[in-house]
Image (cartoon, rainbow, N blue to C red):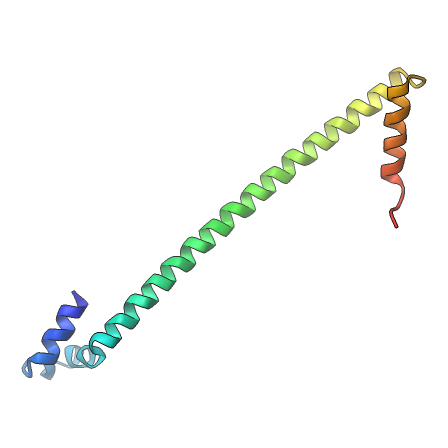
Length: 105
């Protein structure tokens, strides 16, 4: 529609006497194309921002699930160590916990 208005305003001298249309007619096809490009860029930016927001939410949810699993695994290892401190699995779990607590170089 904007292209039609710009074209009509550019052709008809009577329409260019109206300030709003004469200003718009000055844009012509190039101005209309610039407006379309800006609209597409804005749309793509909004879509990218929505995608980034959704990905950040998914990352946070994944990290939360991972933290819950880690806590559950540590709880199970502690139960194993407490119930059977001399068995091989408990010794391996204890060694794993000790290595996790040591500072890494």
